[in-house]
Image 1 (cartoon, rainbow, N blue to C red):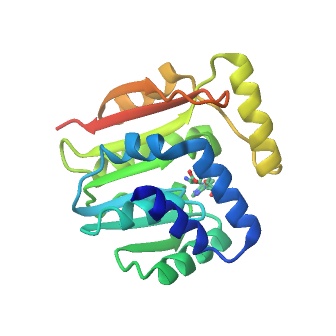
Image 2: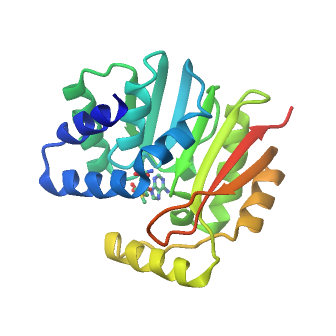
Image 3: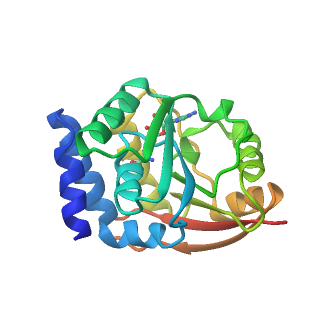
Length: 215
Ligand SMILES: C[S@@+](CC[C@H](N)C(=O)[O-])C[C@H]1O[C@@H](n2cnc3c(N)ncnc32)[C@H](O)[C@@H]1O
């Protein structure tokens, strides 16, 4: 049933390049990844997707959790417009998008949970701790922040990911955090962190950080 949801979401984009990207992205991330991340999201309440891109994941988690209110933000206004259009086509009224920079996120309205999928390595290093602190402010004690990002090791997997990042966004610098460094930053921001590798057929060094806001 959920793979049908994925197909419907992909069909909701009219730009063939975006559709191809989405097939590739969902192909890489697979249903198992969607479930692995989704199992940690609450069934109700506001959920924040920082760096939502075209909206693939926010659309999926809104479609599979009708009592959630998913809010996606991304700095790329074109991506946000495509996400909005896809949401309208799918008839989803529990997802909303805004074009804004994660660095401006203040965390002044409470959310039940938040996630950032492959975004931390795109944010300038000095801006990551303030962003994590703002996310901590936005969450209640025990609320979850999920972060999926790329580890620095093993080096060949990092290079593979770097080449793909260069191909997708040649003008955007990236900085990959080691799992230890990102765990320490999350801890300093006020989260209890568990992390595990997300095993993939492709050589991505994905790590999922499951973070709970400390009281
Ligand atoms: C690799 S894409 C991941 C998109 C989406 N999370 C996904 O998994 O499909 C990274 C996204 O981060 C966005 N991004 C980069 N820097 C950002 C920032 N400072 N604030 C908000 N979004 C940002 C880019 O526009 C891009 O859509």
